[in-house]
Length: 111
Image (cartoon, rainbow, N blue to C red; front, side, top):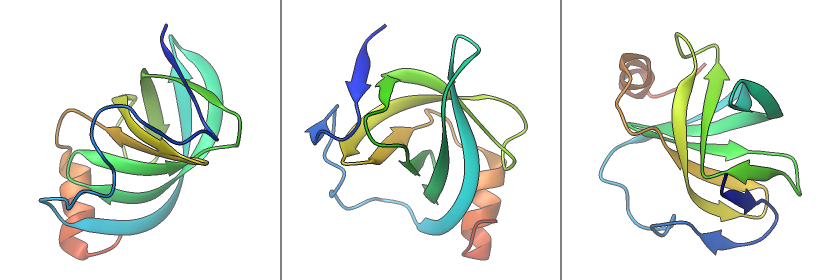
């Protein structure tokens, strides 16, 4: 398992300040991060875009580059991929578009 140290600035693929093609919606949704079914930590989803999330995680959390995220806005565990880390913020790609995310973006807000 490859891990990412939260609390250390680094880029795991593309720069998080880059302009997004899609719309973002701010939110504050509780979520759980799991790897192989084991809880790594709880976190907050801070914003959602079509195919990605910005998470707030506890400082010093070690995240695998691939993990599952569970939240009430999803119908089950969703595969996530670490894209960037800055302090206790983590940007992840979901790799797929979820109808629930599109609905939140259409409404201009997330739960």
